[in-house]
Length: 95
Image 1 (cartoon, one colour):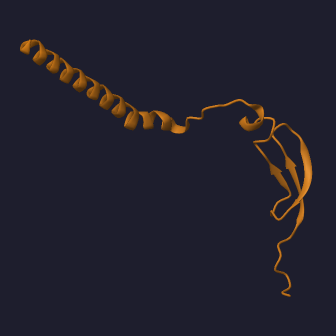
Image 2 (tube, one colour; image 1 turned 180 degrees about the vertical axis):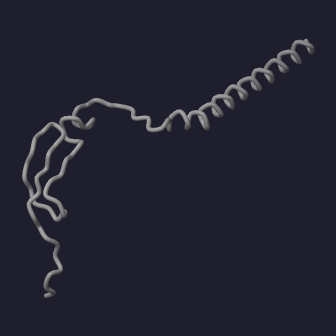
């Protein structure tokens, strides 16, 4: 077997967002890890859904695609209404 191929497996202190600390072992090169997310504030565990809109991505998407689709649907409905009006006028002229 080759010697010295495995990383160091040392103790690591983990501090969670709620202040809880515990010691575990890890191959990370540091002695302390601060976590911003844990079961006390993660939406999966709390049941709270939050919509994160980073840099207006949702609005940007809606501007590109949402409005165009709504305009297309409105245009299709207007075209269908115009065709039906023409058919009704043609049937009225024949009678």
